[in-house]
Length: 127
Image (cartoon, rainbow, N blue to C red):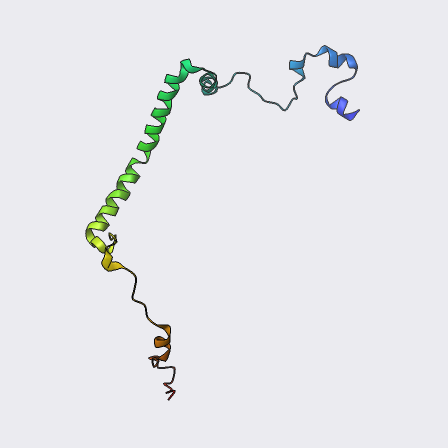
């Protein structure tokens, strides 16, 4: 009964009298007129092949504008890279020359048999 009173329904005739459009809940604030961008988007989405050229041109414009927005950042990073490369040269980026190969192999037993150079560890001769 409380729910019926909240909805202002006193009899079955109250339900039948109201058309479906008027039975929307009072908390719905749906704007019956969609914004122009929504109308344009719906029109673009519902077109067939006849709308291919305008859609493609819009996508190309969007892609170019997106790239141009990051243009100053890309130019700055590229300029900084070349500036650092010109200052440091091969120490910054090297071409992988054969002289920069792996370090020579050192036998671990030879390292273990060497006397220590740490002053905190006493030198003990094993002989």
